[in-house]
Amino acid sequence: MGPGEQSPALLLRPWAESDASGLREAIDKDVAHLKPWLSWTLEEPTTLEGTRVRLREWVEQFRRGRAFRYAITPPDRPSLILGGAHLSSRVGPAAHDVGYWVRRSAVRQGVATAAVSTLAIHAFDHGGVDRLVARCDIANAASQAVARALGFRLTGSVTVQYPDGSPRPVHQFEMTSVDYRLHHAPRLRERARRVRVVTAVEGAGQEHCDDGARW
Ligand SMILES: CC(C)(COP(=O)(O)OP(=O)(O)OC[C@H]1O[C@@H](n2cnc3c(N)ncnc32)[C@H](O)[C@@H]1OP(=O)(O)O)[C@@H](O)C(=O)NCCC(=O)NCCS
Image 1: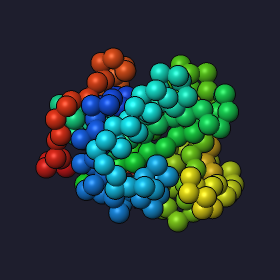
Image 2: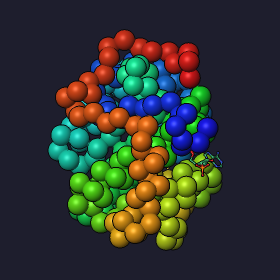
Image 3: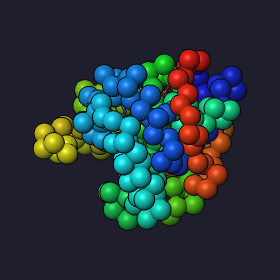
C-alpha cells in the first residue's frame, strides 16, 4: 500500500513504561526479523522486567532531550505496537540520527516512511536540526529503501561498533535542512499526513497487551 489516502492512520507517541507487555509481544513475535538489524535487541529475547527497565531508560532519555523514541500504533489501539521510530542527538547538537523498525505483519504499508517523515518534519521545522543521518547495515535492503524513498542521500560507508563490540559496516544516508526545504518537504508532508503525534503526557501506553491479531 502506498502513502496515499487509503493508508490506515497511525499514532506516534512517546514510549511509556506501561508499554512493557506490548513491546514484549511485538519483540517476541518478531525477534528473528528485528535482531539482525537493531543493536538494542542484541540481548533479546529478554524478560518483561528487562523490558520495563529499557522503557524507563527511553522515557528518561526523552525527558532529558537525548533521544526522542516513539511507539507507532494504530490510533484506536494505542497499546498495539506496530513499531518504533526515534531521533537522537548522538551525531551532534545540530545533527540527529533516525532509527526505525516495524513489526513484520505491518511492513510494506508505508509505516516506517510515514513515521520518519513526521519526525523529520518536526526536527527541521521546529527542532533547529541542520542534518538528519540514517545509518543502515550494508546488508539491510529494506532499511536503505526507507532512507532512499524519503530522499536521504548516500554520503558514504563507515564501520560502527555494536554494543557487543562487533564491527558493523553501514551505509550512511543524510538529509540536510537545505535539501529538506528545497526538495523533500512536500513529499515528507504527504507521507506524514496519516500520522497523529501526541505529547509525552497524552501518550501514556495502556497496561494491557494487545496481540495484534488485525496486523
Ligand atoms: C526496514 C523497515 C523498518 C521498513 O519498514 P516498512 O514500514 O516496511 O517501510 P515502508 O513501507 O515505509 O517502505 C518504504 C520504502 O521501502 C521499500 N521497501 C520496504 N521494504 C523493502 C524490502 N524488504 N526490500 C526492498 N524495498 C523495500 C518500499 O517499497 C518503500 O518504497 P516506496 O515508498 O518508494 O514504494 C522494516 O522492514 C523493519 O522493521 N525491518 C527490521 C528492522 C530494521 O531493519 N530497522 C532498520 C534498522 S536501520
